[in-house]
Length: 105
Image 1: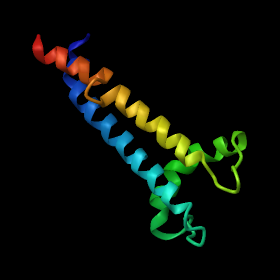
Image 2: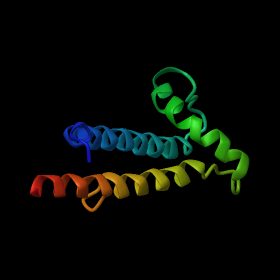
Image 3: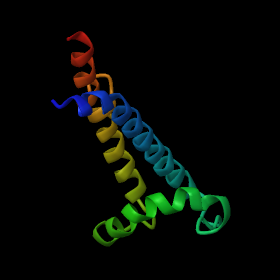
Image 4: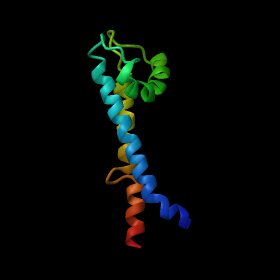
């Protein structure tokens, strides 16, 4: 690995973890908000959770229609993002293991 990449790897690990954690939280909040259909998530404070997630949910809704009137796409994306977070920055994740090996050497 190049020295620049090695030196920036802790920052990449941290930023990737924070990004995936914020997406996980946003999808979790979207799941909870499906229980409250009277809440308009396209206005006010809810835009913080609507904008970063709707980019993924809108195309997914075209493929997976609501089941029994319930939109399950936030659950699907919550699972995908949680899996990606675990595989990349979790304790046994790729970036975590690379950082661990670099600290040993």
